[in-house]
Length: 102
Image (cartoon, rainbow, N blue to C red; front, side, top):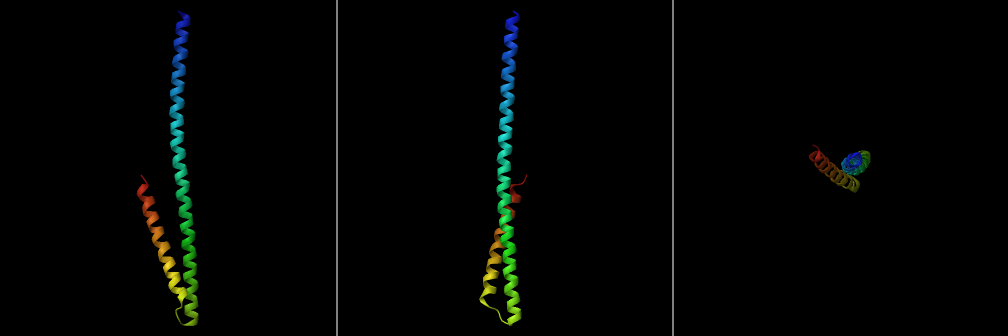
């Protein structure tokens, strides 16, 4: 009789520990997926910010040249287009990210 109770207790302990390990593993996998997505989103955001800073720098340089020379050159139009493109992409990215937040 004692061996039957011991067998039942050890079987129940094994089943409970297996279920607990499964739940923990599932929870960790979900967290890792969220962290991977967050890192990916942060990398994209950093690239867009750096591109935006670069576009602002080009626009500032073209503006300075135009003021110095007293005329608008092709660099101004190109810099403005690049800035507008990056600005639109950054805006859309921020909308996308903020719509995902809970």
